[in-house]
Image (cartoon, rainbow, N blue to C red):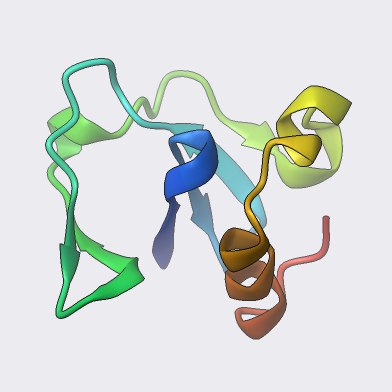
Length: 80
């Protein structure tokens, strides 16, 4: 897995598979060096039981993406 964190939607996305995983309610994700897409996370921070391919996300989810998170997806070449 190559996960990046999308803060605006509280979701991790695997940039290799385009599968999203919600952050858990008690997530303690921290950005690394001011870079919001690179974060320190543990298995407890990621809900691996509820994967959703990015193409199957809701319109509400896509509309909630911040401009910064959209740029992260573009940079990582993840198609929404």
